[in-house]
Image (cartoon, rainbow, N blue to C red; front, side, top):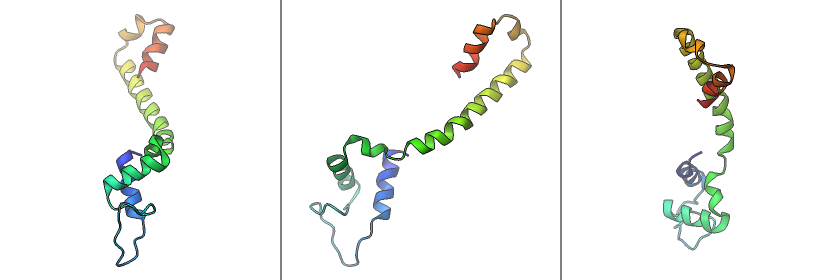
Length: 98
């Protein structure tokens, strides 16, 4: 999750009672993007902006690995002369590079 997505989500999920005016001194509510950014940095530290980034990365990695593998297999099938000049060591690093 991108840091700005996290700030947007926090702003959307906060419940502000009707008729309440949010000030910068209020520590539980955010009055805007800048206020949310400052409070997150002050109370939770720099790494709070990347909370929740691990699940999307874990979900995306296998999908991209399969895509790159299939592209490499398709490339090798089209160009048979490419295989003649490669040793198994070179082939391993050529495929694992992408």
